Picture 1 (cartoon, rainbow, N blue to C red):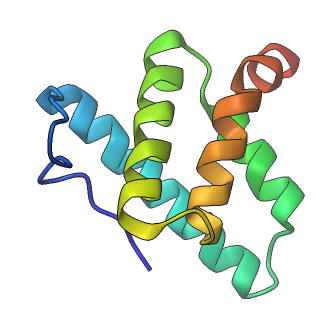
Picture 2 (picture 1 turned 180 degrees about the vertical axis):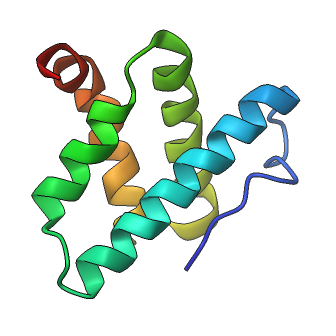
Length: 98
C-alpha cells in the first residue's frame, strides 16, 4: 500500500521541492513497512531509522507533511502511517542522538 503526494490533497499548497521530499519520505516508509512485513526489520528499528534520517529542519518539516499525506490517503492504521507519525514526534531526539 503506497501513498503518493501528487496531486496534493485538496486545500494543501506545497512546492515542487517539498512534494519531492514528501515523496521520498513516503517511499522510505513504504520500503521499511515492507521490510517489517517480511520479517527483515523490527518495527522499532524501522521507526528509529525514519526518525534519525530527519536530520535538518527541512527534512523534519517534509516528514510531517508526509505523515499528513499518509493519514489522508491511507488512514491511521497502516504501518507506513505509523512509521511516519512516530518519526515526526521523535525526529528531534533521534537526530540529536545520531
